[in-house]
Each structure stands twice: as C-alpha cells, then as structure tokens.
Image (cartoon, rainbow, N blue to C red):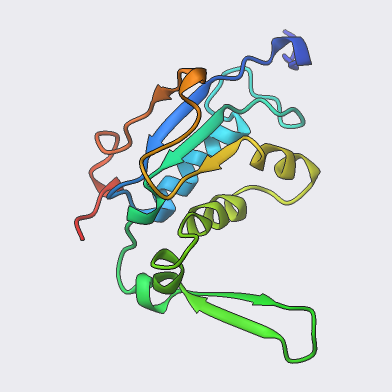
Length: 154
C-alpha cells in the first residue's frame, strides 16, 4: 500500500462559519486551528495548505473559564528600550479590536513557520454578527452541541 500525498489539484477548500457567542476561547481556538490546517480531512498532508476558510463572528462575546478574563495578560514590545506593554483580556475584549483575542489564540495553536502564516490568511474574525462573505455560502458549524464543555454562561 502506498502513502497518499495530496497535490494542489486534490485540495478542496470550503467556507466554514462559526458563531463564537458563549463558546470557551481555548476550545474555539483549537477547533478553528484544526480546520485551518485541514486535520479534519482524511486526505490531510502536513506540508500542504489543506484547510478550509474559516469565518468567526461574535468574537467579542467569547467566554473564558475561571478568572482568565481579568488575569490573562497579553504582552508586546514596541521595539524601544523599556517598551514592554501589556493589557488584560478584558481590556482587549472591551476595546476597539476584540477579535484580536481569538486571532492570537488560534495563531498560537498553529505550529510556527511559513505554512502556518499562510494558513492564518484563511481565517477571518469579526467582532459582530455581520460579515462580508455571504457570496461564498459558508457552511455553519455549531460548536455548542459537540461538547457541553464548549459553552459557558456569563
């Protein structure tokens, strides 16, 4: 038996729509990362971009367990001496760009490298319920019935 290796002609990308309202952040990010890589497909090939295009809406309504909303801190550096900055997850979610929390969580669940950066371009995250991708006719993936731990009430 020969090992199957996908070629660019074998790749079939779909559009997936995920509503993040009430979903736990880490569980959402792991499912989105799996879909972006294409590991849910039987024809998965590690060195090819096999994943689907994923649209995440209502990113500002994502939930966190425990005290992560107030305790989880995101750090970055400006590049200048003494330029380390930080914000809590709560400050980011209530700020101008709450979709960055979901984007960062998914990015950190993918392996580092050129392929992962390419796969991240297939992710679209929106803070509200509106998105400009209706023409692609995305399939809705409901995460709530998959596992009772996926949801959390506020």
